[in-house]
Image 1 (cartoon, rainbow, N blue to C red):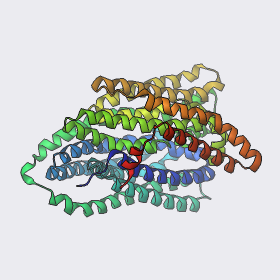
Image 2: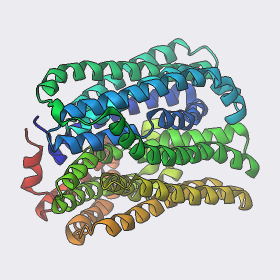
Image 3: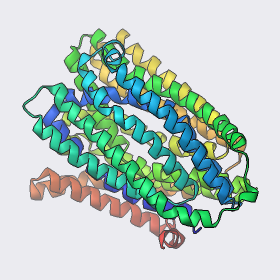
Image 4: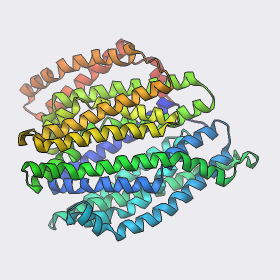
Length: 514
């Protein structure tokens, strides 16, 4: 089967990701202006619980199937590839079915005892079907990513996001005159519908590819189902345990931040509103560049796994450095923009300029978030998921400790210390992952090409963006025109300088072409 290169596969997923982020941002803007920051805070408080349960239902098998399918594809063992899919799909189907039923049964207990907010009960119920759908969809996406076919994932994500947008808009507008908890429930129902349609899309695409996969199959090269199941579970369990611990710590964060702010003297409503701004607005902007890292991650794990199966360590270094370079190029531009004009961005997009304060704080360290994602994928491709989890747990533990410390500090420091704590976690996790990679494989990353050239281009953005905004605003007296024009101009200057210094080469463009 024809497989996509690292950059081309990442480019396909990045385009889909950008499209979905635009739709997602449009939806989030509408939600902010209908259910407000408190409603958004309610919605966001449910998500760590949802993510925690979904990690359990998938058992780390999406990463495992991507790695194992890539390994077998490098040997043309397509019969074994289909075996791997059947085994993982059956395991996840069984676990997710029973888990979803249990989640629905105990939703009220979770709302009142764990989240300590009865208003979240209806949101938990509405998002329950998404648990089942997203678990099965993740297996099929991992399967296609293992084959280095990123188009099925891209198509399904686009259809999923469009469905979610339409259903959420319809329900939220219908429930405008009802209570806040019911309005927020409409957004959760949209998530479930979107995940369901996304899964259906993946099934249809799989059925399209199935005859071709069967034509390559050779039963003589097959392994026993039991042996494959043991290998998959052995690889997946450490990922599951680690991710569960990490996700539980995120859940603690969603409870700790409002709780510690209350101890500082803020009301429950004010604390929930800040958490809504932080998680529903600021972190959404910070995570926007992860469109690139997620796209690269999906390609990187199977690409490195394939190189290991072929004992091609020069390819491992080349692919890893390629991913790091692209991540730093795009990530650095994003954080400079977010740092320079945070209040104007938050005002324009959400009509909450006060969210610019935590956004500016987080932007100073956000580049380490993007790098930690890439470093984590490199380690997973090297067969070291335990190290990724360990480093994430260390970073989160330090973050939670710092967040807890705000109760001993003056009230006015609370928001700043919480935002800074999250940024410090990015820094610690990325640093630990970097040293862990170089303990396994010496990447010999080019400081000049990967870091110095974009820093030089970024320094021009730092100088040009604020001045161009002032000039254009003086002429137009319009924030939208001034902000978009100055960002566009700065972005053109940034990438032009990268092209002039051979940071971006003709080879990069050729790899994107069909």
